[in-house]
Image 1 (spheres, rainbow, N blue to C red):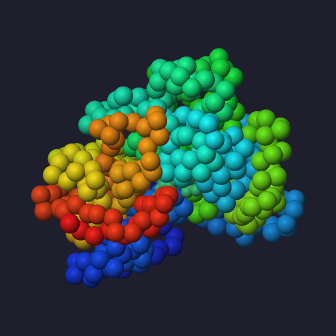
Image 2 (spheres, rainbow, N blue to C red):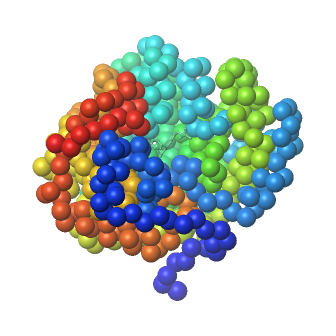
Image 3 (tube, protein in one colour):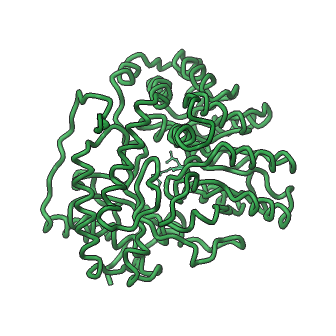
Length: 458
Ligand code: P71
């Protein structure tokens, strides 16, 4: 059969409130032209993020009823811990309320002034938590990652030569950990190959540096490895996940993505000492070690979610549905980050709107256009998100920064006709690109400005 179907039926539905263009014009103005400030019931199709926005399965909902809410030693924790240990191969498992809580604890322990933390590409909260500790966050993408129109099977790879050069320059003693983000989110949801992970591991071993995964989208990454990496076609996704994690000393995970839950996170550690210290910090601000800021029912939903996310018919559908949207945009002549990622299609707003300079936020102009035209909410990943902080000594040159608009697909939520509608909306915005206007910021917080800044159209 030619059509790949959603491998599930829909048992419970939520109505979508339709809005008129005139209403949306007013809503956008009131929201200061920031999509984060729009009320979700004023959105027709919500592609702001795939984080915590997925639909749970009947088995996950059943898990919620089984959840045991004991403060200490809940059976739900031990069930969750066992499932996580089996899948990821780590003895030490700390639950957290979401990814950034794991990051905050990790970088309080490993970061600090004068420290340097490389990554293929840090996402916003990871970078912010590293910088908050006083350390410098450095992106080391491969050069192909900076050219949106050129496809590469593993565009998320970390640039190993650049890593060696950075170590030679600053010294291994200033680099407590090398992070690798799978899939790479700020650079297009692109996967990292097993070969690249092994190469990074080898460099870390040479210099006695820890290697951690930022593994929010580990299952999508493993599926791409199975599909694209030579010799991997016969391996199961579960085996590939195990091999990826076997290379790492630890991982921070937001379960709101490939955990298929609406809230939850993990900190995985190998080292007993680090685990002790992390446990103490967890208790200080998150909660006791057997719930980490979550309810027992959330742990049950997560345990089940990690099981479902490595099912290969789910992943085939997941990756195909994102690719389908990418194909439609490509056919409509819209420049996108090639190839489409695992969780999102990224519009190359820099190429779409060459008349809007980076300091007038071309991505934000496209985000506003999509909302106006069709009530589609997307998110800017460009100068709004990453241009606010003072660039460190190892920041990428300005002309290598990307101006992207991410159409992020929530898991198991939207159907093919929803994607057709989104593609039409993007086509319409692309057709009126010359009429899109840049913006200026009128209000912004000192860090993570994209969440709350307010804009005016120029
Ligand atoms: C995403 C998010 C969440 C988000 C961020 C910014 C705007 C809107 C939504 C979160 C990630 C991530 C990676 C690679 C760590 C976190 C933090 N991503 N690493 O992509 O993608 O996890 O949200 O659970 O704290 O929309 P957390």
